[in-house]
Length: 94
Image 1 (cartoon, helix red, strand yellow):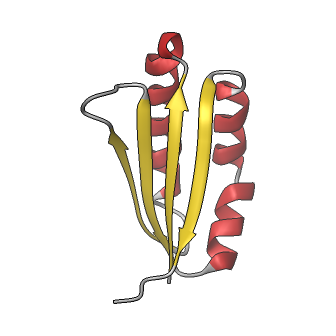
Image 2: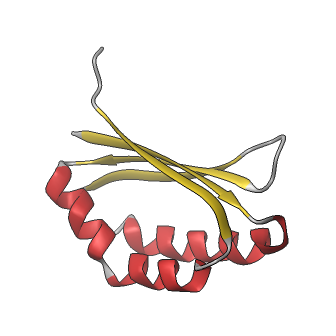
């Protein structure tokens, strides 16, 4: 299993648009083979900060996700609207 935490900081004027695009992407992602869970969180103190918490069956499933049509559509729809994007791939130790 491969876990992923992605932090996305959105430009303040783009929060509603990007959030809507994230929710569209999420709806398609949870149907993917190899997706164990795919959760979206919004920071309580700063509405422009989002986190995806994801678990995949492995690296191949994650790579297939990143190449998928719905992820590519999200990337195009949010181009220039993000202030920061950090993705960490994690291995559970205990």
